[in-house]
Length: 69
Image (cartoon, rainbow, N blue to C red; front, side, top):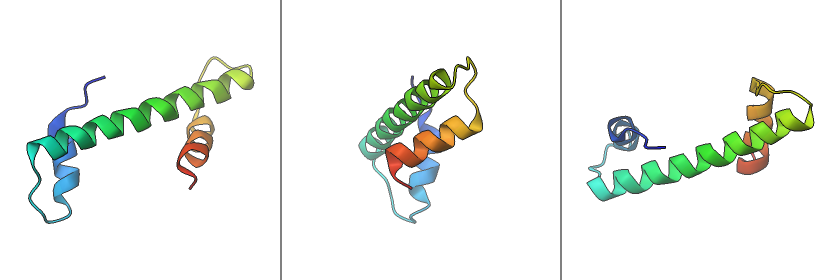
């Protein structure tokens, strides 16, 4: 999964600071890792519920579990 860097850079620049290219790439990599972990947990939630479709509640539960929100 290769996340486009422009949207990531826009997110980082909301801090009103300059952002290096390396920082953008590292942040994109981190976001991809987090997204992959949430997707895997959401898929596991759907599978435990004997479904083939991941739904919003699976993603929300995965987010709560992995990000402890």
